[in-house]
Image (tube, rainbow, N blue to C red):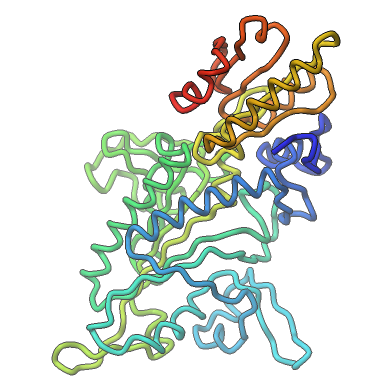
Length: 417
């Protein structure tokens, strides 16, 4: 994409009434726009990042047998009453339609997925099955002040698994844990992310969160460095030692929750009368699990982690573009610089390299500042100075080292770093 055609602009001004770092820098860099507290538009650069994260999540869910669907955001009151959550789930956005019926905007989808799958599963031969969606969720949060980390409207991947037994659920639960760590690895968060014990609520003794260490994190976790697991703040009083190795020296850290998984047992299947026929012809409750991960929250977390004083440093796989190509105009050689840069832009695109091409007629300082703020992994510079050696300057965003590379070798260089 030519940057001169990008309708959004960067800004030096900090957005008013926005205290979170991730939202501040994403707004300044032109990735998102704030509509109201906890509600954001994703602009072209931000949309590209968000879609890449969703595709990573999608690929890893497909790899563990997930089948993707898409459920409605508008959900009927009756479904929530069936599970006794219409009055007890205090973050629901509720509304009344022209038909005088009451609805809730989907905060989660157990009430929709359970009766849906019930229509298609009757026998043990139909189980297990795994169904997921990536969809917008709505939660009437009292305090939405952490940018993409705590929104009133946000994206969520929720996968639901259906089993004949708790043992079968346990096996899939472990598989889902591994898939989640693959997602965090691909998003550049693996080294800072811990599997964290959390309260299981009404469904089981423990659920599991995935918590990423961050200085601006809203959560407190207690890490066992022996076992590489953590316990969240809400259960630390009852679990003051590591449940795996009995280590009492747990390290407290701030963190951001980037995913969670629950064993639902038969809570929702019982509410909806979802039963299957076993091998002996007996009717039994279907056993369920739930696995959530927020692509928009992951995007905000990446920004909180991968940055420096100049802006964002995107991990390669989820960056809006792999390369930020910059042409510097020299008043005596403007045409030559531009022609060489245009040709290189076409060459990189033909090779399958995603390129943001800064062809704007502005000063070098502004171009460099915008490139650092936007944070593409590789910067390629075309200038009168580099062209004297028939070369371009190549620099990674996460490095201070610059390298002159022959124009004919640029594509190979891009693929090698």
